Amino acid sequence: MNEESFDSLIPYDEIVQEALRAVVGRVLGSVQAEGGLPGDHHFYITFKTQAAGVDVPAHLLARFPDEMTIVIQNRYWDLMVEDDHFSIGLAFGGVPANLVVPYAAITNFVDPSVHFALQFEAQFEEEDELEDESPQEKPSLPEAKPIEEGSNVVSVDFTRKK
Image (cartoon, rainbow, N blue to C red; front, side, top):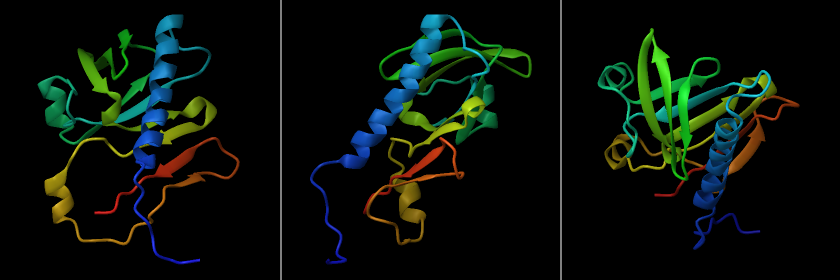
């Protein structure tokens, strides 16, 4: 078989990422509908703070200028789940804050209680940063592999050809 890679006219990586992000929305939607987290479930959600649609207070943006991880566990309020984003109230160092996070800004979603995780590429353009990076050889197809033997944690690596 020829080693040459082909450019797909179907954006498979974008379709799969969108579907996996829908998992996050569906999980958060069920938490909202149930009025809380079931059992020992809790979530770590990492997102790009500079992504379009992200709304975080200025003092948090100063502390986390690129990426931020929030924990949804015991103390949160006003969880509202929409088709393209969620909003939530959390306390940071005892100071309450309301956050708005589009699913497209999420880079990681983890539920450590059941060893489940999803990892994403942020869906916003960083053209200036990409041009500064040295070119690296990247696989042409997404690769999904368990992070730990026997776990439900899967890392999906989506890369794009330039």
